Image (cartoon, rainbow over all chains, first blue to last red; front, side):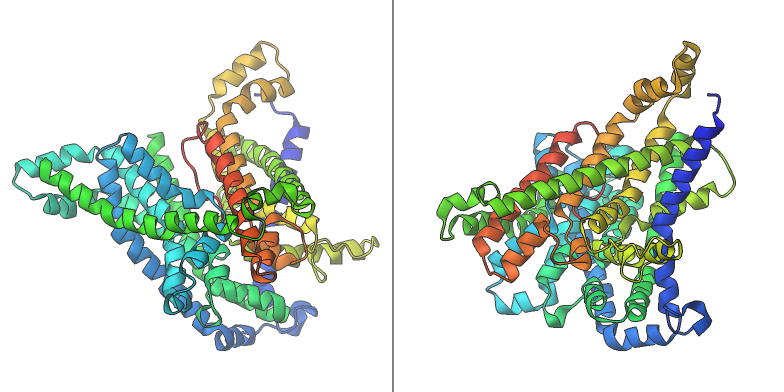
Length: 265
Length: 272
């Protein structure tokens, strides 16, 4: 199509504005977390003091979020990978229905899920006050991503034939699952795992309702610092969050890029 | 393979138990609590019968719809630009536009405060231009910006993939038959990426309807549905209303996603 320079320039402008809209505040917050005084700007000098203060104030929330994400990953792997295979090997109406129900929590606001959990289990004091309560919420929200990711890979590689081959060689169903299905589903498991960890570390909507003062996570602490701390500390805390989540996001982008590249071939 | 079938059934038990205990049962409980308040079963309709809640519903719907339309409009322009041109730094630009993909709502709220808050960048710029300090983070306008920020990366990913799949020969044919640029856009490009527009628009809309973190960070006084549910539950301890409103909100977001899903292959995240 022949190009009109005006249309081209307008498109370029919108694109650059959109990129600036997304990136400038993130850069601002990184900068604010590292400058001595944000309102005086860079002239006041760079410092790691704010990051150190954040560590002093919020270290438990950071560690808790990491552990929680790993626990969420563990549970979603244990439940999701076997179930993903079980659902993928017999695609039918029942399998669709199960997938549908399991995926529902993604389509419902976290607030509603959390209210349901509190109304159903809030009376069990030890459970309500423990991190396990938040873990349940995170698994509920992330499980569909693991399940779908595993199912998508298994649907694409005709795992049935591979399994039958292994069966004819005398492998038991359990051996076939561990030695044939899991290795073949690895790209899906990896993509699902990245998604689960990323979502769990950043989850706020459910966690805000499910947490107690003793079970605060990183995003809960962030909300607290936004409301009550000076801008530099809030920014430094956000910087810590970025350091945790951006590598995960880049990994997801790279994996998505590879998948697209493969499809194009 | 009869024993493999048995293993598969065994593998579904943990999934079934978890979903039953921590999703289906709590949802049943939610419905039960909503109907057992002082208003009885009438509570289910509180979203429509209570004028204050109804006003909030309309405001939330309008806000979510306009934020979604704005996101889609920006997304189409940017996706067409990035999908059709090759230039140095393009990869970096795409990375910048898709990186905030999983920023939680709270963080998005903070980004908007840094942009348009009391000490925000936009305020400083508008002041130095002699237009006074522009501050709009703590209002509906701030929430609007927040929802666009939240959804733009997701919409971008989907639309960029759709634009790359479009067949350029269709456009060339339309052009050679004398169609104008606007006609090509209306009759060829938009229908071509239509399914992706519907799908990503539905996700953006559903997310905006249920978004809690952004509103929570910007201002607790903004009247959107999620904030109302939160205050009914925690401040007024009005469990029946909170439950009834969550059910209504859940039905809306789920309904929008289910309606548009037929158009699209894959759903990404929704209620972030």
